[in-house]
Length: 282
Ligand code: R5P
Image (cartoon, rainbow, N blue to C red; front, side, top):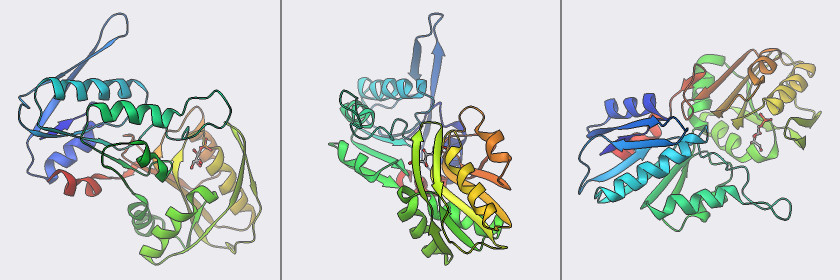
């Protein structure tokens, strides 16, 4: 049974249309004091349930915990949790003494009432090791690369930093495109520096791909460098489009287009991750 998480309604509908699986809605409401409520609108007793729920913004994380609890309390046989965008993944270690490892804290809560966990383009592969239940990280990068070929006609795919190098390389190789990466230093949450690098982009169409666009600082700086190096077109694509604050305006000032998947549903969701998930659910 597919349990339609309230944070991922369009993705859940796509999955429901592409598979033969039975679906169940989740009712949510917010009390006057801001506390939240969830109710599974169907009989899931004895059923193998898959809940698809992205966890951004944070209230959707709370809803996920409550949905899992409702499934357990109401007798689901098994619970598979699919989190298209796993928020808090970037805090995956103690960077400074005293900090919480948020990515681990939420993994520990999720596994309490789950039998299996799946996500897409987790910020780091090591997050799967925080789970003591079977956990798997899928990738939307090849789908983003395929979409780039269809819509943006790129000569090259570029990762904006070393962190994205491996996933972009893998996607580029699988679609037969050239690839390269830039070198980024993060100064603070809003500021990054990207070293000029001698990649031949003169007159070329470039697609930069990353797991996340948050403030847009990384992509804007990467696109600026590439345009200064002579790139004719620079498109920016990512799996998870958070677009915090004025990210869209910043990106729009230098990028020829910006696109993302539907792990976080929005207008710029040009690529669906549904094909990655249908096999799981069917
Ligand atoms: C960081 O390592 C991630 O892969 C992204 O590059 C980063 O989260 C993007 O953040 P922002 O858009 O704020 O530069």
